[in-house]
Image 1: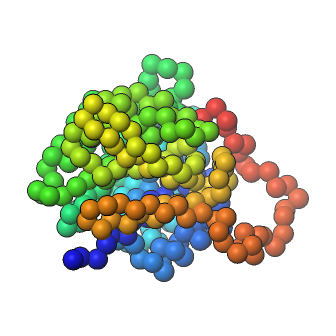
Image 2: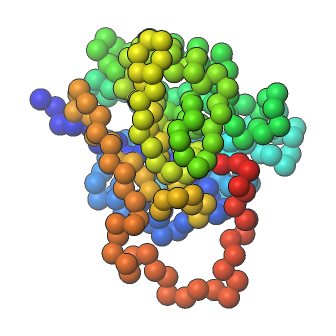
Image 3: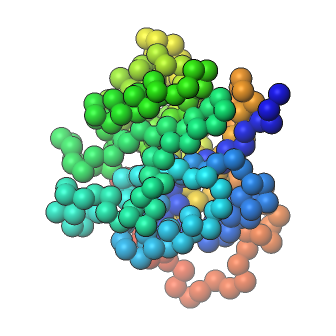
Length: 272
């Protein structure tokens, strides 16, 4: 029997308001544990600024294992509408080959589902939307997998509300879940709400497991900075939430608190 696959699921790094201690901790875990792959489910940056993408590019470039990256709503430029409409993912250029990169192992594949759109018919554009085009692309990748290969799908937004303090309200999410259930996906990994969750969602074609990762930024909701450690043994997926609450106290402390300890951007309670 082959060794189990070890996958790390990270989300919501939010460079620009990142947590350096959390990122150092995760980098150490990756270097020590050497997972088979790392899946990052969006919101690499805080405001999609060039300097934030540069920092994200540098950090991701040091991971040293296969990586797939899903864009998040914070990774679309919100302050320059022409860029948002015409080339919303331009600043992913330094690691464009990692964006929604399909990773295929002997009996498991990681396949991306984009839940971001430049604009939509509601005021809060931070919410997710699964377009028919994005869903068709994802399903085509799953259908093309070798016989016997199961799929884990990565998306930024949970495809339905997950019972967390953050909200999703993803348009087209229930339709997507039903189609993914039809194909027997192992799970859908997501982020966005900054708290981990693991739930089963019923659909007309059977249940789908939805797994959310927390954040590695200062924008905490109800739980500490965390990531998910996933183990696939060929039949079952085991999830372990790894959070900084379990570290020895000195690892959580900094030597000095600056006089102005306010983050550069105040957390926005209206969007995740």
